[in-house]
Length: 308
Image (cartoon, rainbow, N blue to C red; front, side, top):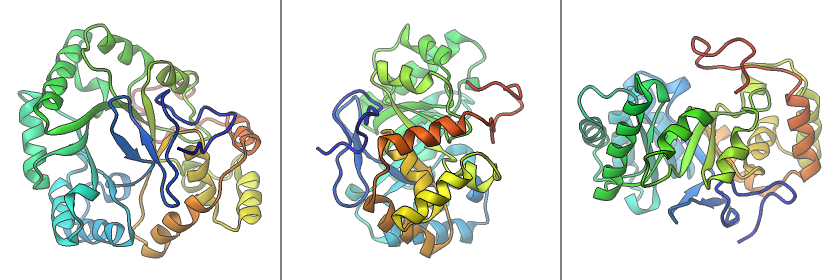
């Protein structure tokens, strides 16, 4: 396996380094399964989107070669994702499908069964607890995690993890967990690096996935990383977005992005694997990013300067 980091610890799970295949690298999780490090996300722009748009966008992603598909119950488009998977003709064994639990009306199993039915699948590769506020008490969060563990034991979720958890939430489930989460998917970009959270993940063998990794370009510009992104894009003959994705991947972090533009998606798959940032370039972006704080989600939960 070839490291894509260097002085940065390249594998957020603390295990073997990402496997560079000449296309999108994969990361070995703490349960032995591997996850592609670039995913097509069904949230944000496609959240509760018009059915035809969602299906066509997912089909486009599959057509150009995105085989890691990141969905969720709350996105309101699991059914459309399932239709796109079926219409694409891509063998199920070649796909990595993620979905997430947002609400638990009765049991996690019931929520999971409903997701599988909407997706039209027999199993998912990764099932996540979408946010810790799903539980009203720490004890309830532990109970929910135990139910997720049972789903993994059933074989219908190959790997299990969490999303939007802080260290305190992870520590809560550690107290009773039989199986640690393989990953924590968080909003992650230069302007929201979460303090010591990623290091905490590494210490406990948990991988990190980044949603909204291009926020510094798409939502929070102008900002202190603009010039270095532009300079690196010129140096490597790529786009600023490619640089933003590479900054994530070169830290051993899975990047979840989206677009309905076929040319842009093709560019990600062709350009992102074609270059690597140096450790000093990764460090420079990180350092500049800490000069600004921007959170795109959950601002109703976290204070304006809460960088956790």
